[in-house]
Length: 102
Image (tube, rainbow, N blue to C red; front, side):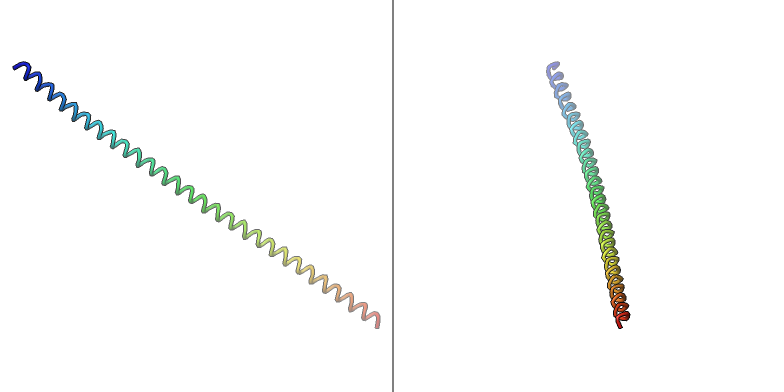
């Protein structure tokens, strides 16, 4: 009788240990899943921040390109004005010389 009681107690202890091990496993799995969710969220946040930085860099590059193009256009317009003034001055000088010659 005592041996049967001891065997039953041992079996009950094993069942309790199995249940506790199952609970511990479930808790560890839940913690791992939560950590995975945090890692995924952090990775998504990092990817979004990187995308935003890339967009900002592209906008800055486009603005710089517009500034360069505007500066080139202004320089070209200034050079064209100088050539026009030089032509006008040369024409005026030629007209003065022609007027003096007649």
